Image (cartoon, rainbow, N blue to C red):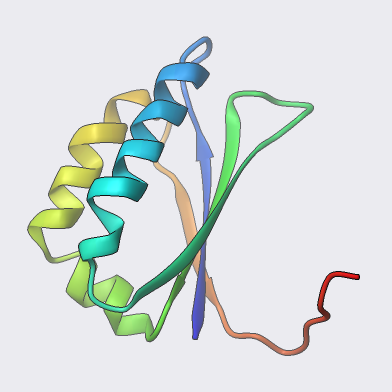
Length: 102
């Protein structure tokens, strides 16, 4: 499994609309993507225009090739791209260790 972390900065005052757009994508776009497993979506308490979007993929290529080169990615960017204050910073991670919630 691969964890994609996208650090997203949006335009001021657009949080409610951006969050609605992401929810739409999570319902209508990401479930159709090859290798998409799960997500978490967080807003920063100190900087409400900053979000962290975490997506789990089966393989790196499922995100970087299968999704990014598909029409689903075009749909995703059309839905949320207008909210971005700057391009998201995206990196990929592999798990070293984890604990279960208690």
